[in-house]
Length: 76
Image 1 (cartoon, rainbow, N blue to C red):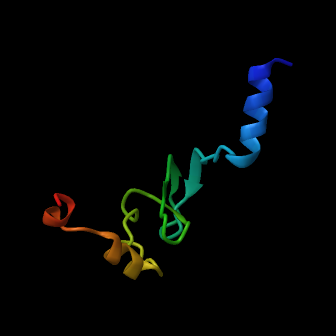
Image 2 (cartoon, rainbow, N blue to C red; image 1 turned 120 degrees about the horizontal axis):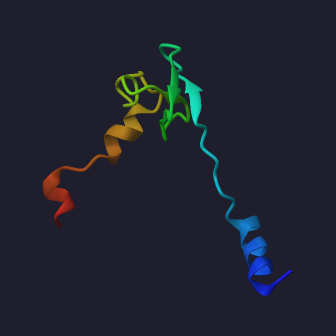
């Protein structure tokens, strides 16, 4: 085992690589989707029609509304 492999294994314990599924079933409509969208506010998987928080009645939609910025605010 080389030095590079040792260093790589050491840091992989602290920063594990997140595996994303290739296929998932949409939580709302039940459609089997290739490369589904994961909502970062409720951690569920959705098809392209239900990917946005207001399309799937996300339970944390207030956090999504508060995270959005207007174009003028992003230029400051």
